Image (tube, rainbow, N blue to C red; front, side, top):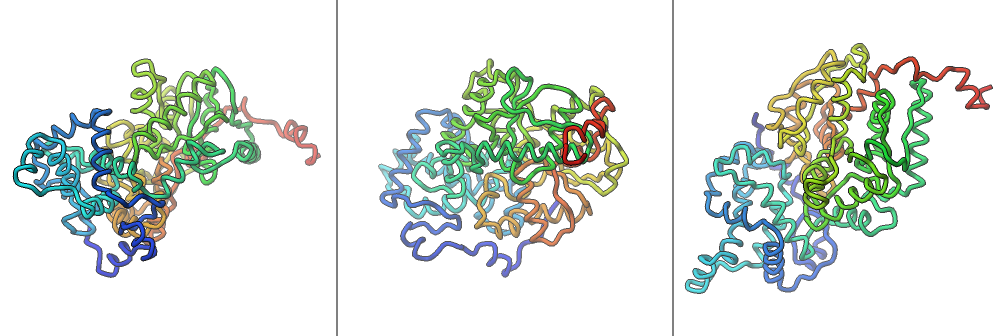
Length: 489
């Protein structure tokens, strides 16, 4: 699938910076995302020092040594990059972006590069090249679709992540991500949305009352229950903005009867470290592991969030026990398994609208979760339609890699990053677009609004909540409801 290039007026809108000229001059950094105050002195030297430290204490060197021996310039990745398709700018070709960092590694961290530098001079890292990387690395959505096309197996998104990691250590990172992770790791609330525990409990109690009234079933959100099968970590933003998703999650557990809980010690699955800092990534997954062990839970259950699922699935073992690490399961895997076992019944006559499914990159690109949500949707959605391409070859929502959290670049995300996705959604004609990921939901809702597409973006469990058939034994009799609510007598 291809898209057309943006017009001159769209280009101007997408790349217009909201930062004040005096701030750009003061920070000596002409990027479109806001950053906090930083040391502008000798950035190339500090960049190389950080790079050297990362190479010393991680295994990135193995990948980099492989990548520099391959051709990173054939540009086959351009055929799959939705950013390049929208802009037509050669600097948006993934291998061009990767070469920005590989050239630094080749020149400053290989024997051949250092010898050539001494003999011939030149090739040194400059402020201008740091500036180019700071802009280029955040134009990428890190969707990793280009890796499927690369004949040399170069992981361009990994290089983008490494470049962001180095830049963040010298103070160059989007303020939106830095502020959120600071609150998550050092703030009083301990989560990215600064939701205090009393507000969390009030929200869940309110949802319980709503579900009792609507479904006639006592659906609970267990809090701080020990020895459960699952300790639940959704994107904390779900507690603020995705009530239907949460109600669907709770309704599934009520129908199956399995034990689960939400912990008040930590309840945020979001991990922005996956986008820009391994140091942050490790600290966040450690918090998830610690809270699960505090509650003596058997499994870590991640909600509808692509990056939260991927960061926990692949990095809990890395940082928290290796082969002995706690199992990590996505809520869609759990729900699908319960349905396959016949423990979850769905009404096929409730959802009659045309429904399409969007694959979040972080759970589909690794071929992890692709068919499970589709099988569920087809079981109760009469008018399910498939978008193409899909699955591991899916088209990114346009806000991947943490860019969706940077509100000041929304025009870029919905005009450039999400342009191909908008074409795909429009072509499907769907009325419900199921996007089981907190970041995808935010991006896609802004995308359909800015692109004028008439469809509603929902979570998988939003629709499941509508269709779940509860056993009669779970129904609360009207008399019992009246006794529990004296005001209704």
